[in-house]
Image 1 (cartoon, rainbow, N blue to C red):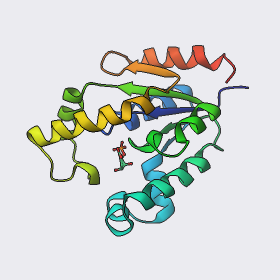
Image 2 (tube, rainbow, N blue to C red):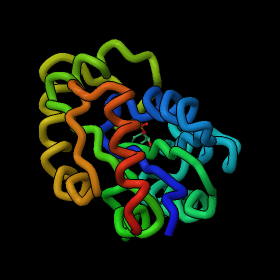
Image 3 (cartoon, protein in one colour):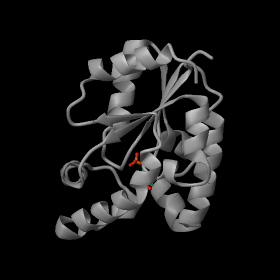
Length: 175
Ligand code: S3P
């Protein structure tokens, strides 16, 4: 089967959307940010969805949205940081495309999140030591899911060219 989708996974702030846009441009593929797709579909922000419906409902809705994007072709999909860790989402991604885990240390993630102006409900109001503790603990819980990715990338070292090489090589393999 031809490779039709690449899923970028990893913790909040690991650069999935930025990289996804760059890769899509280079490959002349489409780009979908799962969080944006969610907000478009539900006509609300994720932050608002979290506060009105709660995280459990968000995970269910996120699962549905993921099912929808598995139908897209020639698309790079940047997923939300929690998406791989609920239901059979990781298996779904591995069955329908190439998953790449953008692996970073808690320290690097913290630096990136501390300078981001995106509203993220899970870390709202956290900074300094509290933020690093949260990331360290959450990343430890999530790592077993993230590590089911077909490719584990050192996201600090890898360049866009490096990712393209991986995608082109893996794209020749059958899923
Ligand atoms: C979440 C990450 C967010 C978004 C939501 C929950 C998480 O996406 O889906 O706020 O559980 O890690 P990003 O990874 O794009 O920030």
